[in-house]
Length: 247
Image (cartoon, rainbow, N blue to C red; front, side):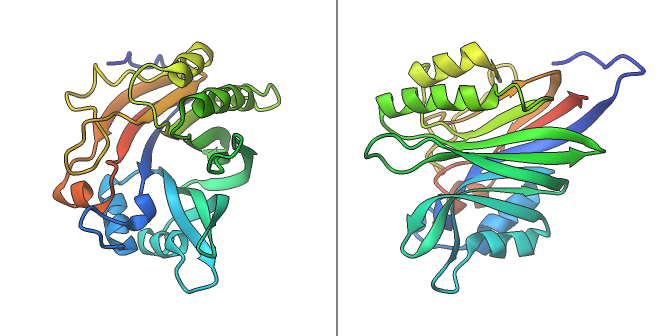
């Protein structure tokens, strides 16, 4: 799928997953962070970008903390709103050190609050920018969000390779996909996967989870994790990409 890098160039292999964990609520209606953690352990990724995560709150439930403790990875959350007294939003877990993080508000009118999470990863002393996204369900909402996201990613003050992953809530080439593809390189899943649908988990028939990138990156491998556990643990399947990044 990709050419062998030429000698003398500084390339690093990175395995990244995007996974909407649906508040750890599986298709059997059980809420089980330990089950999501087990799916993540099976993926064996360096970085996991998760959406729909319940964070700290008034009660003892903190899915981000519980999953992070089980898998043994550092994590940072970008809450978009509150859900029943808890923070709720995106989480990035990483084996690499996370040197900084930020978020960009993507909320549109009266729709549910959304954001784009940015985490800067220290990969062998170089910075890799990861953007974790969960766009809205309305057509015009996504159009606005795609424009905001593209401007955020293209900020000239943020230099170096960039990877944008997440749940884009768009299953065909619509306004958001067209706009993002014009600004960023879209990962085409067709050469890599026979099955490309990620939602809903047990019998997926929609492709909602996408990967975009900017900079010198080579796609080495793409996987859609279809195990008995992953098909039940959430309403989305994890999408994994192995990249070779040039710094």
